[in-house]
Amino acid sequence: MDYVKKMTAKLIHDALVSMNMNAPPDTAMITDTLEYPPSPENGDLAFPCFRLSKALRKAPAVIARDIKENLKTCGIIEKAEVAGGYLNFFFDRSEFLRIMLQEILKKGESYGSSEEGHGKTVVIDYSSPNVAKPFHIGHLGTTVIGHSIKKLHEFSGYKCIGVNHLGDWGTQFGKLIVAYRKWGDEQTVINIGIDELVRLYVRFHSEAEADPSLNDLARREFTKLENGDPENRKLWKWFIDISLNEYKKTYAQLGIEFDSYRGESFYYDKVPAVLEKMKERGILKTDDGATMIDLEEYGMPPCLVLKSDGSTLYPARDIAAAIYRMETYNFDKCIYVTDAGQSLYFRQWFKVISLMDYDWEDRLVHVPYGKVSIGGEKLATRTGNVILLKDLFRIAIEKVSSIIDEKNPGLENKAEAAEAVGVGAIVFHYLSGGRIKNIDFTIEDALSFDGNTGPYAQYTYARTCSILSKLDGDQSYRSGTDNILNTADEEFELIKILSLFPEKVKAALDGYEPSLITRYIFEVATVFNRFYHNCQVLGAKESAVRNTRLMLTEATGHVLKSAFGLICMKAPEKI
Ligand code: ARG
Picture 1 (cartoon, rainbow, N blue to C red):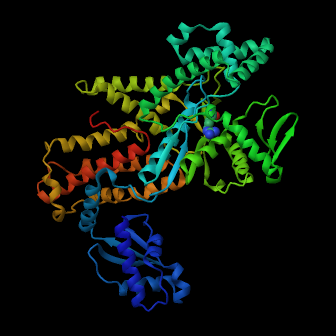
Picture 2 (cartoon, rainbow, N blue to C red; picture 1 turned 180 degrees about the vertical axis):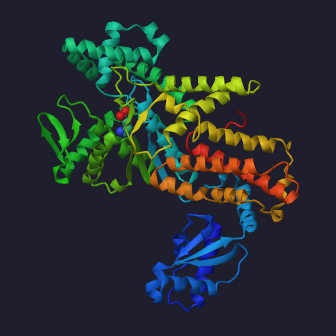
């Protein structure tokens, strides 16, 4: 659409010049003001003339009429009509189809991508679960929103580094070490994996309620770990490996890979140098033994960096990590994706970065998302009100498998397809609403496959593949781009929605809002299915019509596949 918008803007610009307007807006400005009329009777693009009123000292409707009278002809615009203060443009539909199909088919899966971020580097810190704690539905947000934000940046030409800032340091390891020595054994941990670690951790908490001295013991074990005690180090490393192993299975199901797994532990020994710098700047304060940076002046509680026992705190490690990442990657942006509960926390330490006289606080971006509850209740590991991601995915995959068994028993790669669709259903469901909205998650909703769902979208993609596969590799339909003919409204409706993909990518990127892509996918799927229902594709008699429709089918496939990739959804060709 970009090209068509620019052409239309150029026509408007030239008309304003021939109207002798003094300093008319340039084509880029006009392009930005062009709007999509809400209904087709008002044309395909509209130019609002209100803002020109002052400069031209005429009523907007008069300006619209004057522009229309001075408009040169051009292939793409069939006619222009004045409606109030707007000048509405109607495309020559066949010409529009020709221009857009040519562009989409030429670019294929890169259609919608851009070079906007060329030469820029973005670090995206996402997922980042706390080791030895269950990986549950509460982590789905950071994982899929984070990954989608990464994909949107990559698609827009940025160099991206996806970082899993594992929660692999902190007093919880002291607790786990104590619990493992008291109640655990090696073989059970090997056999059961992370669930056993979680069980031990939960047991620690309940036992410590009765016997608080366990907490002191845990603190001592953690200090030993910090001081490099070899036994504790070995256990700690082992707990991490077991947890990571488990997380990686879930990441694989989502098609996610990280560029770095440097977690909190990587930074704790970098904290002293950071504290030194803070001291030089005169911003460190001790209160009740703890070390902190006072932020009262900025209306925020203090940012704590060291406990009274001298161990490093979460913010200290984040500050050290940001400095390390700046030194290592020289990022233009470092994006943190966490739930909105951590918003204040990020504002606090972002401020500390500038108090340390670094000039890149504005390159740090926190992208928050809404909280998840289940059945109206807060998530809570201890009461069991959690849904583990692995269970959720398993249930979804089982449901899809049984549907496939029933509807398409002969399908090859059944297991692969069931995984792609089952996991895709959950992701699509999760990313359907704006990210900041709180979500009350229920398995029933996530696995209801009616209407606006991942399976519906994936099924539509598979349909485009199936139509094209009937041609047995014959691609002659693509060679007839000057032979394109519009004969049905549905074709035009479809190409119009496909033409919007680059703008949707840009909007999702700028707003850190994957749901714009999810919603767009649903629109494309709906419009394609209407087209498919009402227009014969393979069976079309006239060759120009058949070619046009096949090209539309291929173009839809490219757009859907690319869009799925942007939201962590796989695109099986057969379901
Ligand atoms: N591990 C943290 C948690 O589970 C999230 C880490 C987010 N990233 C960061 N750099 N603080 O809450």
